[in-house]
Length: 266
Image (tube, rainbow, N blue to C red):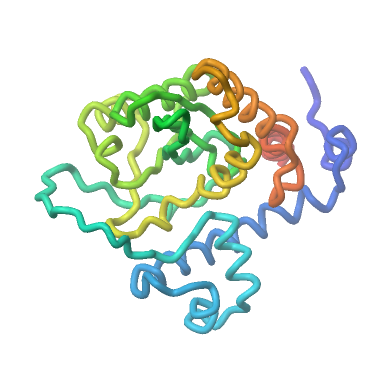
């Protein structure tokens, strides 16, 4: 039987300070509670930036800004383009992340997709990210943004991991489709969705997409779609395993290992 490492031995093995094993969980829980407070405030005052939120919540504006960046929270900016209203008869799912705090890797995932311009066309990248560790668990690239784009991203994550307890997304038609929600629920995963007109409630991947596009560079420098997709794979791999995450102070993969071992040693 393999004996458990002490926290001191674990810190030495991972090359980190002993204090980090104790500080992060408490700080994360505090940040998560503030995130929820900010989301509730934005639900009432969607246009509030970090300065007004600080006044509203009576909290230091620097802390508000740090937590907003941490979870990708942004005030709502009304688009000039007008959309025709249609009646939505699909199932309404609650935002379970308002009442659930992730305590270990592979517990809560968030899913979203972004657009990349390439040779006059639009390429779509869907990702599934572990909310706690920031690790990209799975992703999918396509020339369309139908339901199978987000399903393939989910299947990509499930190819290497067990199903999470919760998967969160916005209320996009791809995520509200019966095909997607039926698959998720058949796997025993709880569906969580942001409330309508509350895009900040699914900002978990905003910080990743912003930095990812910087690291990827101009997609038009590639001669073919295949070359672009290969670079997307490589960029995500480097993000997970090598690139130091500003908040985690280490790559997401290393942080996931740290959290797993810390939970086992607790």
